[in-house]
Length: 160
View 1 (cartoon, rainbow, N blue to C red):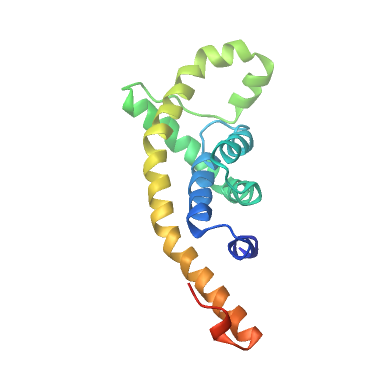
View 2: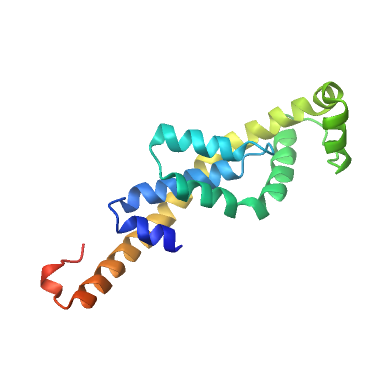
């Protein structure tokens, strides 16, 4: 969190940081393992988001990633009225031993999970942005107030 506070005092707006947190958390929960770092990198470049923050958020999403993948697979199968395939740890072995068989058996489930994520992600981004923005603005205000107190003269440093 110190990284975020430091960015707020280096000219990055609270709006841009809130967008970075929102997009980074949504992409950090994309339902395909091994893709989130590249997705965050690409989104950061395209949207001109802060790379250290978006990658930090991506890393912080790691403990939630597998449960979200499971939920997205279930939601995707429900959205497409497909029977639910039971996900097993052994699926990863099948992926490495016979990728063709893996994708024939589970490829559409992955597409369904991505579709479910695509339905949920915009709402997630909006909620994180709306909830995060006031918090970030308050953090910037407090950081500026502390800087004014440290320098001695509040008149020289107006609080936004």
